[in-house]
Amino acid sequence: MPVDRSRPERPRVTAAVLAGGVGARMGGPRPKQLMRLAGRTILEHSVATFCASPDVDEVIVLMVADHLAEAEKIVAEGGHSKVSLVAAGGASRTETSWAALRALADRDGGDLVLLHDAVRPLVGRRTIAACVAALRESGAVGAAVPSSDTVVLAGPGRDGSEAIQSVPGRASLRRMQTPQGFRLDVIRRAYERALADPGLVATDDCGVVLRYLPEEEVRLVPGEEDNIKVTHPGDIAVAEALLRVREEAR
Ligand SMILES: Nc1ccn([C@@H]2O[C@H](COP(=O)(O)OP(=O)(O)OP(=O)(O)O)[C@@H](O)[C@H]2O)c(=O)n1
Ligand SMILES: C[C@](O)(CO)[C@H](O)COP(=O)(O)O
Image (cartoon, rainbow, N blue to C red; front, side, top):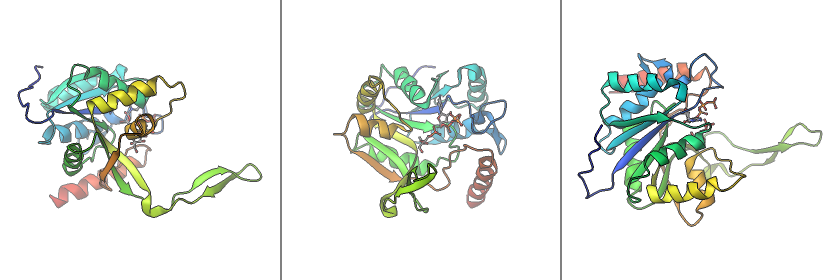
């Protein structure tokens, strides 16, 4: 599909929907992004929201290699015309993010990318807009929500069982969500350094920038409580209920 590059006045925004995981914690015969919520796959919910966002110019999908054809079918039958590419993800989330960046290798360093977990099907347009707006002033941004639980640092206790090591102040704790957005030159530099580190362990992309480009501020924007990550079997019913609440509020 030809890519429209005809708006030089603002950076081009590409959303990369990361769907390369197998869903081990969910279990089941197929990756959880292919499970249905209110008649649509979880993957399609995420793709459709980015396609409908006026802040997003283009969407790419990184899918588990064994299920590429299903992802292509979902995109084609859903008429999601902003999707320019469906390609294989990697063996870990980090590798899938890197695959997304490689797919955008020909783009200008000033263009923007939003990396999003496909399994956050309730992502809202407001959060997408907040990320893109923050990227006018910052090279890296992530959506986050305050923690309503007390979060503790755990470690080995005296007899080998788990014990609390410390209790970080809750007021400054946030739970990271996606999208996480970046200027392409920033996230490329961070990943180049990260991939050269044999001890690389990353659970999100903002963390990669924070660790490998410490000079770069990683800004936070408010996420949404209902933007849950469908991870365990019980999360399907929760996501369905949240989706219903959202539909009723419209
Ligand atoms: N190799 C991987 C692993 C994960 N992801 C994506 O990263 C997001 C968050 O990951 P997670 O919830 O951990 O998904 P899975 O890896 O599928 O789950 P599990 O860890 O239980 O296997 C998901 O959209 C998942 O598809 C990815 O693109 N490529
Ligand atoms: C990126 C993320 O969704 C931020 O909360 C999370 O770290 C992904 O973790 P997962 O283990 O790959 O699901």
